[in-house]
Length: 364
Image (cartoon, one colour):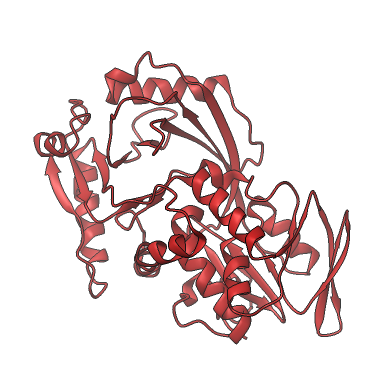
């Protein structure tokens, strides 16, 4: 949706072809991180900082704050090995000019900032005060409303059945009819690879499905985004993260299944989430879960997102962290489609890096 809006603002005529309902995909279930401290390499870090800086302008333009705030982020550590890994990680991040890094804190210091963090399992953590949070459902609703307000054509319930070259452009064949376009942007989450295949591009993306749980609105419990570093010593260890939405609901998760496109809420995964988060936050041991959500997203083998050109008039947008990247991705991808280049879009994200023998690059 962010790409569609930025294309419209750039003067393009835009047609959205949506298999479900506008804004109804699994981005609504994201963790709400708009954070820099967890980004794996220089390209991801620079892109995250770009998104953090641009989000206020984007939200002002679409007329919603979407709960965007400087909340700070914690990554909690349970072993000395993890502490060592994070120090190495920080040293690599600090090679990016202008980046100010994150702090290392012991358990007492963590608790002084976020009193809910006091489990003896935690020996230390890292904290970045400048990281931000956003409410994913509010963001998706805001983007969808802006798309309608801008008069962008939207075909909902339209499942794409074919992508065919048509002169110098493309014909998109769908269950509600055909659409002819000069350029096609495939930004369809877990369907990116199958749709790219229709255009003749074999894009090796894996699938990862995840589950997250929510509660009724609660009294203030955590201000920041809290993530616990993955611990390989714990069987079935989930990606343990906790945030509190602007409406007071707690979002608690996440169990991930790599290689699975079967997104469903599972009782066993719910039990794993409760077990791990109760051990770290005892107050949550008996809190009722009101809803469980499951979704699927694509993931490249190298863990980087895919943004860029993949052929004449064909573009791919497969995020690694869709909510965190949405602001920067919308602006840079629209610039690429309209002008043929975008200096702010890292070449490391090119989808062609995954295609043997293909020339890399974000432009044509």
